Amino acid sequence: MSDLLETPVRPNDPVIRLDPEDNVVVAREPIAAGTEIGSEGVTALADIPLGHKIATRFIAKGEPILKYSTVIGFAGDDLQPGAYLHVHNVLNGAVKKDYRFGEDYRPTELLPPAERATFMGIKRPDGSVATRNYIGLFITVNCSATVARKVAAYFDEDRLADYPNVDGVVAFVHEQGCGMELTGEPMDLLRRTLGGTIKHPNIAGAVVFSLGCERNNLPKFFEEQSLAAGKMLHAVTMQDVGGTAAAVEAGKKAVREMLPIANQVTREPCSAEHITIGLQCGGSDGFSGLSANPALGKAVDILVRHGGTAMLSETPELYGVEHTLTARMKSREVGEKFIDRINWWLDYTKGRDTQMNGVVSPGNQVGGLANIIEKALGGSKKGGSAGIEGVFHYAEPVTTKGLVIMDTPGFDPVSATGQIAGGANIVCFTTGRGSCFGSFPAPTIKLATNTPMFTRMTGDMDINCGQVIDGQKSLEAMGEEIFAHILRIASGEKSKSEALGVGEEEFSPWPIGVTG
Image (cartoon, rainbow, N blue to C red; front, side):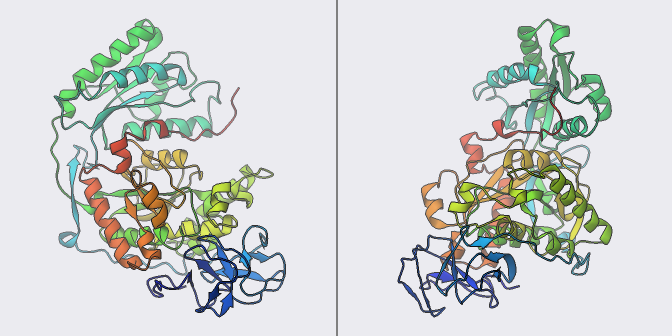
């Protein structure tokens, strides 16, 4: 399978060919009906929007549509050369999949420790390394959300002025904790997410607020997550201290006690092996799989060689190309674990109008994506070319170095919340439509797939991967730029979303199970 590095974009060519075997090309710019496309020897039969597909030869009804030499659907009609291909004539259908467990797996050749890149990190006593230094305010149940918010609001910029090494006091609130199943996967998942975030290296200290009678019982939660109250972990139960106002004051007191301790940190050189990236994409377009996603994949390959870790997630958005991933997995056991999660999702979404069952969002369609297979083909490229070392459940601690998969939904806030709970200390988020996402306590770096959107939304976008589409940079060079940017953000430089204060509302543990 070729990529743009091997087939450079021609600045004067209105289309991009991704593989010699493809029967479609992608429009680099809006193409008017009647435009001759000399490189392909065809004339556009209709107006072709930026990022959308054009047939380059006759495609008979029912014949596979090939992009990146991969089947993304089947022709709904006889299609003439120059025809516009999209949801109206690219149909979903059964694609034969050979999982080839582990056949393409190659161990990563790690750089010697002395040659690995470094960043300015914060070393924690347990040996972990932080990229940020927050005090977190957590809740066991939605009933205590107001208390957490009020305490966080109290510690504004002026009140934190004496603690320059503390990045902020952040409330991590959610809508769960009661009216839910007392035992089983939903409660396990919630507790695992909360516990993982509390124990995250980027959380220097935490206060956990509870109401007192909720199903997510505070003592049981602490026991299951091996948490113990102390100097840097406080628990406040509203019913015990006297209600809302008293709980707010108790929370303020706890934070005041922790701030001087949390402030006693310094950044020092740390190996890039301590960087763990959560890979995200949202608001995808026809360029996502051509520029930002594969460029991020190049950066992931660099990080993995330096001993770091990256999590490929959003399982429903990998469906359709899962066989290309199982072939890269370390073993049949790892591959079958991934397929088990795919099958779980097929059962979970059966009969529902979801991406898993073929239809992508309206924004994805406007951006040029015809179906979930095409989206998955582009989305999977965030994982680069490294072997896949493990598969993890949502918010499960990621204990394996290298490229791994974490099972998450495709919804960005829920997905990133699980990745961060699992240990991600940076999130890299690609977008073609223009996401305004951010995250705490791990910062988000946003990568634009195309220059027009980057220009419109420069206040939210960190990196313009549209330079690849414009023919100004190769994927390799773009990947190196992304990796260098990751090191700077990990060292404390603020991402665009951080500077805007975006991320507190995006903490969103996965709500599965019965609400009663």
